[in-house]
Structures are given as structure tokens and as C-alpha cells.
Length: 426
Image (cartoon, rainbow, N blue to C red; front, top):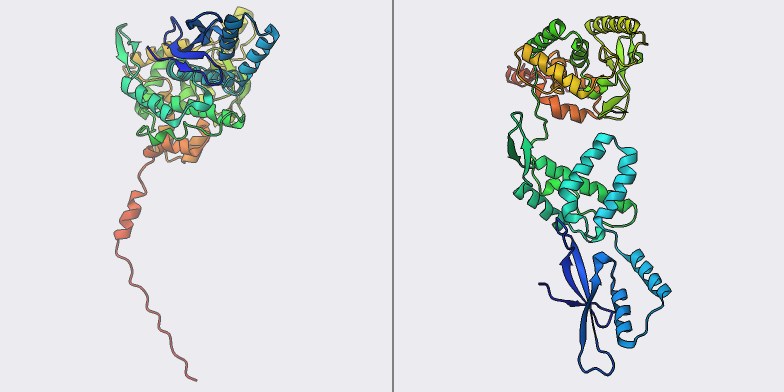
């Protein structure tokens, strides 16, 4: 059991570090004791008075000690004033500031998907360790120790596989880096608020090696893409226009589900990507900006036929044509489950390997690059915030035509011309 420590400035008040009873994971706590002697008695008394988690403070313990010794009490108003002052001067904890950051900046300025990601990292990895630590007291060494513990222990958690069996899954290095970057983002805001002076979580790459940042993708060949589209057109006619749109524009799943007929310019042959859906919530695209994507002649024709079919369905059912381009026959919006179900069914029917729906976007980009389109055009079509993202993802796919440039250096070079300069006399 930890030893008691004297509380400076409060005579006869002692503290012992402990944990909050029943807390899981254990949360730090403090237990206060008072030592005193009542006039006329020969022995000292020792009494446990309360816990910090129960709103006890050293001043409150000192007031009780005074009452025990003299029978006098500090006026309640003074006690309340002292406790209010102590509460104001109490250092803000990491958990308290993280909550303010989530409720303020994240909820107001970021997408719901980003908020969900931050919540997961905080609740599962960060707050169990740093929640009750004073924000200004956390050091870079503590951040390193948190990272190393996550990497070594892995925070093993059960993960259900397709066959319903449960296996252990450990954290990836990238997930740990995301956790540190979350801590860093919180501290950047705390610096702006004038609460702390330094960020202990800057540059996590200095102590965590992540390797290649290139995303793992599974790209369909053009022949496989054609086979998938032929199969969808023949057996899954309802989802065929959506799949063709994904494979001819590179639009994300959420952008496809939010596409409205008013976003299509039939004369200009382009689609304006204005919004995206995530878990039923409609917002801006991932980059936060609207973009235009070119529409091929085949896609234009298929979407026009699809629009005419939806008009006929609406007329038959007696309701107006849905604004959304891709809906069920009843006119209700598609969701991610509908899309994945038909997409995977088409893959099975075409006897193609299982890939993610998002890999259609990567396949589209790879086909453009194979056709010698510039990375700048690919960036604009996909809506990347910078060309660096495009280069990181697809730069290795650029055809190696320039390799001949170094071979041309080996070719015999013409002899340098000798220029004769005549000296003019006089």
C-alpha cells in the first residue's frame, strides 16, 4: 500500500494515492487523512475523512481537522468559496479538454465519419490511459510509452470472420500513428487556446515506423471490368447503371448514393459531384469541395435509359420521379448494404475474385493511367485534395516510357564541332 504524504500548506492533513473503488480500468484517486489532538487528551488521533473522487479537498480536510480539535467550524460560505476557488484553479485534464474538442471543433467542422473515427481512437486507445492526467503535465515520454504499449501488447480484441468464427486481431502500426495524430490535434488546439505551450505528440514518425503509406488496392484489369459490366447488365439490370457510373467516373460509393438527376449536365457531358452520403447523413464530398467528372458516351446513354425507366416506374406507381439517380423500384434510397449485396452477387456471377467496392475507383484510375492520361487529370476526376495523394496511390502505375530516355544517353554522340577563330592583325 502506498505511503501517506504530507500535504504542504495544510497542517495535519495527509494524502495517500489510491484508485477509485470499482473503476475499470482503474482511475487514480486520493484518500485524505487528518492527524490531530483534542485538548485534554494525551494521545493523537488519526482519522480518514474522504476521497478526492467524492469531492474532498485538502482545505475541506483541514476544516474538519479544525472542527475536531476546537469544536469550531469555518463558515459554510467560506468553505464554499474556498472549494469554488480550488475548482477554478484545478488543472484541466486531458479527458475534459478532449471532450470539449470533440463537442466543439470536431462536431462543428468535420464530417460525421471523421468524428466517429476520433471517438473510436479516443475511447478505445487514448482515454483509458490519459483521461485523468492533467493536460499540461503529459510529456513526450508518456506519449511514446503509450505508443510502445499499444504496439507491443496489440490491444488484442476479438474479430468475427465471414464464417462466424472469432479470431484475435491486433492493432496495425498505422492505427497507432492515427492515435498519436489525434493527441497531436488536440494539443494544437490547446496551444491556440493558451492552455499549454508545447505539443508532446508532434512528429510521431520519429519514433513509429509505418513503412509504405501506399494503400493496398486490388485493381481489375480492363477485361475483368468489361466482364463485370456485361454480367451486371444481363443479370442485375437495376444495379448496372450504378456500377457503370462507378467504373466510368471513379465516384465514391457515398457520392453515387447521393447523386441527383439535377447534378447531370446532359449537354456538357459531365456530372457535378456535390454531396455524399455516410450512414444516412448527407454532407459534402470527402474533400469538402464540389467537382466535375467527365461522362463517357456509353455512360450518358445508360443513364438516360435508366432515367426513362424510373419515370415509367413512377408513373405506374402514381408518384413523382425520385430526385436521386439510384433508388429501389419503390423509389426508396439505396444504402451501402443494397449496393454491396448486388455488387458481390455480380462478382460471383462473373466468377471474379472478391474485391471492395472502393477498388472500382482504383481500377478506374489505373485504366486512365494505362491510357496515358496525366496524373493531374486523374487527380481532378477523383477529387483528390492534392496531386501528392494521386502520386502516392497511383504513381507506380505510370507507364515506364521514359526509361528509353536513359538509353538515348548511351547512343553515340556527334563529335563536337571545332570552331576556328582567326586572329585579325593590326
